[in-house]
Length: 140
Image (cartoon, rainbow, N blue to C red):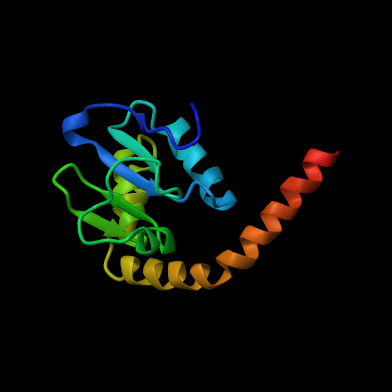
């Protein structure tokens, strides 16, 4: 699959669109995992890192807002962000639905969102580290 190309699986009527930052090495790795796991799930993957890539952005959100956090969009147009987006994604993945059910226990989504926000502060440093490690592995 070419960079930026949408990948479709499952029933398009119920498709969940995963909006991801294809320029982020962490995001690319994680999305690659979800793409392999979700081959039979109703998922679409859309790299929004480049203005000329992917489909139209969800109404009311800028590219910068979408790149700052993880987002998914249901077929009915509803957009989820952060921890709630991960729960929506996990609920659609065979073998991961138990994690979505666990996340729906009282207080769990709140805790996950706070943890995700903490991760977002570390993300730039982690991206630099991964890029450095990827550069070393290519030279080896």
